[in-house]
Image (cartoon, rainbow, N blue to C red; front, side, top):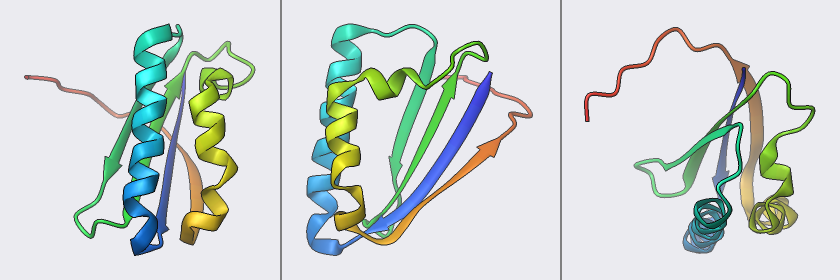
Length: 100
C-alpha cells in the first residue's frame, strides 16, 4: 500500500469553491466505487488550508483517483486557487483505530 498526504492553502475567496470541487469528487467516488483506494479530505480550522490523504493498493501503477473525472477537474485549477501550492509527502501508517 502507498499513502500520500497532500497539504495546501487556497485564496480565502476560493475556499468554498475548492470544497465544492472536492465534494464533487466524493460524489463521483460514491457513485462509481473504484477498488483499491481509501481517500479522505479535511478542511483545517483556518478555513483555507486543506489536507488530502489517499491510500492505494501497492500494485496499482497510478492512483485510481486519476481516473475520476471530478478529481481531474479539481486538479485542473488547483494552482490558480492556491496561495501555498500543494506539498505531497509519502507517509507510512503506524496504526489505525476506528472506534466510531
